[in-house]
Length: 360
Image (cartoon, one colour):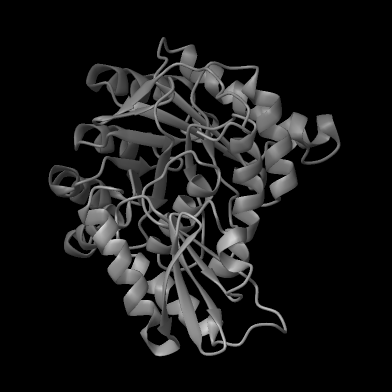
């Protein structure tokens, strides 16, 4: 962990399958399948892709009884713990628990009343299935909006903590709390409020963040700020499109803060009038080739052969271009020069060599 971050918030641990969330465990990366859960083959294929990308937990929508039935085979064959996303119908929650869900996501206030909530919590307790209590700004209760004169951090915090208390009233504490908004600043404010008011793991996310471009930035602002303050135990970057992109963005956020180094980190200069090589294409090709590596290494792609190695001295290895040639360097020290068209292969060769030597 970076020395510049706040200490991690202390909280109880909650088990989701073989994974522990909270209690100092590494921050877990989540996503959600966008397949029809009733299509078992398609759902499992997407889960496998998420697993390969570095996902720790995935969630599937349980819209009806057929989806709940399909969940049994999905949970049996999934390489990841599966969370069942339930809205309104307590019977679907009971079926999801019975069919192997490692966690269920519910809003205790709309599951059908106290008796039906108790049935769900009792079933979860019997099988030690975690419950993610989910509240967001779009579903905030009318009375809280009136009480706080709008959708405010205080209103969202009260809603989330009330939802937790409903599950606690059924004598169960395997709870993960999520209180999200589509506004990153509102998300930050509400999590700051609840961080000191409960002892459960917190799931972070900016809901409905947007497309991979803008959504990744909005998520990085909201999630990254909270993680830097020591708040958060599991995260999801909610993006429109292929959920694998969510995992890539989440890993970059964690890598940027030094919280979870799961693969290469690429740094590259923004270019300027001194740049005499096609740095944009070179950097893009290197980024693409680095995605296939699983070990942590910091790689620099610099556009100035004079200042590049010095500016990127904290990188493990890198290249710096000038006048159609690139200088290969490692740990800030120059090694040798190559022609521009040889630079990418030369860099990947030195990375492979250092890895074979056990350096990374």
